[in-house]
Amino acid sequence: SQTIHQWPATLVQPVGSPLSLECTVEGTSNPNLYWYRQAAGRGLQLLFYSVGIGQISSEVPQNLSASRPQDRQFILSSKKLLLSDSGFYLCALPGQGAAGANVLTFGAGSRLTVL
Amino acid sequence: AQSVSQHNHHVILSEAASLELGCNYSYGGTVNLFWYVQYPGQHLQLLLKYFSGDPLVKGIKGFEAEFIKSKFSFNLRKPSVQWSDTAEYFCAALNDYKLSFGAGTTVTVRA
Image (cartoon, rainbow over all chains, first blue to last red; front, side):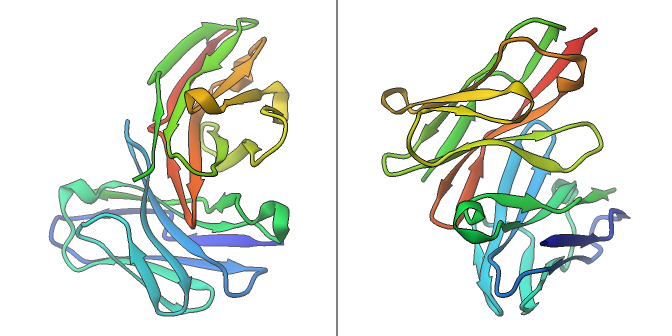
């Protein structure tokens, strides 16, 4: 079965510091991968999606970037964090098989607080 | 661009009351619709989904949702809620690779 690992689970960073959130998946190969941000009162916002190694699509202009260095690894980064980057970051991938392909499974998330 | 809107930000109700959460999407083509739920301290998990066929979809834990194409709506319902239904509920719509979420509705069920 597919599993999603996100690291770190929680992070407190000062404004202007760099960021790296990691997502790794198991039990699948060449998956589409997604980064979402959940901010209070704003629901889930799609930040990036990737259909393969080195392929990143950005959904909204922002202070963040994403990379897909390996098939099962998706990294969310920033060179200089802003206060507005605080939130709960979720990695997701589609389910398996025809029935599950359009259903996203989410990781446990990484909670980022920028002070 | 596709968008999903949820009508209620916070709903408070008593046990055994009926629940209905509104969801509208803006996309004219074929659409796949979902309701996700996030219980306190837990992951987001799928509650139910609509791809095609019967517009009345049954999900887990007694939830159901009705797809009304003419109204671009996919409202979530439960006839009698329990305290354990306290959670945040998200409506979502799929277009190509992208799943767009509504802002979420926090449901608080009082015992």
